[in-house]
Image 1: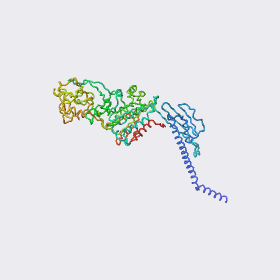
Image 2: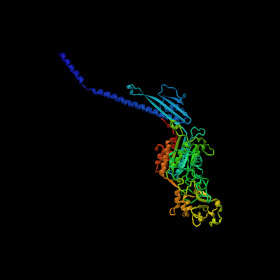
Image 3: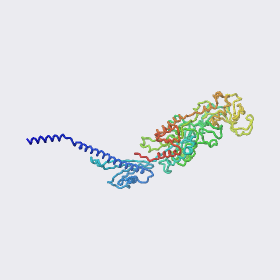
Image 4: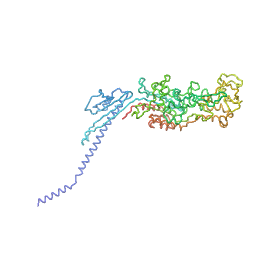
Length: 636
């Protein structure tokens, strides 16, 4: 019985122990604690590994950049080893492959090295690329508890410097506001000249004996137009030819033929459609801007007519106001500097026209013209650019655009597009087509020899003056008043009328509109020739009455305007066309207070390639652009 009682008591104790849960939380806490230690240890191991990886990544990046520098004389493996040791990694081994072959002179095999780096360098004329890979093994402090003794982390980097052929169009504003003071205290154009020459120093580093990688720069100065220059226009289709005059005047004998393109100006008139294309081809028909002075404080030559396309024709009338032409693909800094120093400021602003020429000089369509200039030893375009502009980058031919010629435009302005003046549609008005039509004006061939003399019917009771050389033909008048000679523009008493029989036919010659407009600005020509005599021939020429001023009608017949809105549209079109061809466009707004939008819109990647600067900051902008062109690029 006693034994049976003891057995029952023991059974009750066993059952109580089995149901007793006291102390269970301690076991659970131990498991949680172990898990927390593992998670914290994992974070510590990862943090330590990442810190080491970041140090090695930074070291590899710096070493590849330094080794890829074309001016670097040390071998890539020596640079890599030196960088790692300087960073505190003493036990490192670098394996170097150079241009696909093992390079033996760097390092000694160290199988137990803490860090092994494989370096591959490829270099040739004008480029060097360095790639590096390393696999580092970092011992773990906590993760080895779960069987992970090491963490293997791959690190890689690459850098490249490549001096490719570079073509640059520097398109710069030389409008009147560029003559205003800058915030620097100097004029804006002074700051432009200085910054541009510093830019040339940075980017034009051509080896005279090495044509494998050349930088050429074209300069396109613009105001309300662009002076192309006869050398370039002679290679393009802008000279026209001789055309027959329709229904020439025979009594007295007049012009029977004229030149279809005047040769007084080398500026080109573009239509909106022209801005949709980057190309100007040698066969493309170009229309020269009309030779006229739209307005002037002066009345007539000889000294101060402000022509829309102000050319220096070795004539004292124009030399003071002549403008520099486009400089085509130069490779010598001295030539570029000298051209920049000739820039002067005046006129309105036509950013679109400047950009059109800047882009055209990078488009391969104009290459035959550049080749002709480069092959002509009498023209200072270097022979080494006779294959420029190069073809655009074609992705199907080359995977890397930098394997091809880099094409760059630097576009600078200090304002916004303003009004441009041009010519009307050809034959829009029947009485005037100043491009290629005879004018109803004859001139004495040797009028100056008559100064101080009296000539019967031709005498005006005074010495002969410049205004005595012109005769106006009025076919609608009677025979006795068929010819009109304006007298002193300040009086009306000595104007003369003549019959056809009184005209010395062999001593006069008919003028065309271009020659006539070379002597007078538009307003004054209208007033001098026709204001007094208008009532006599308005029915013939289509003019109405004196209440509707003659000069306004004449001016309207030959002048059209491109307003700022159309110019902005043109600019947007040509910039988009250039970007589509892979041309890099840097835009500089120099103390532009309003209207930055068109320039930002033009630049590659918008704000990333647009610089808003003032004063001496323009030099900083040019320096940043030069650095970006030349920069050493991390490519991985």
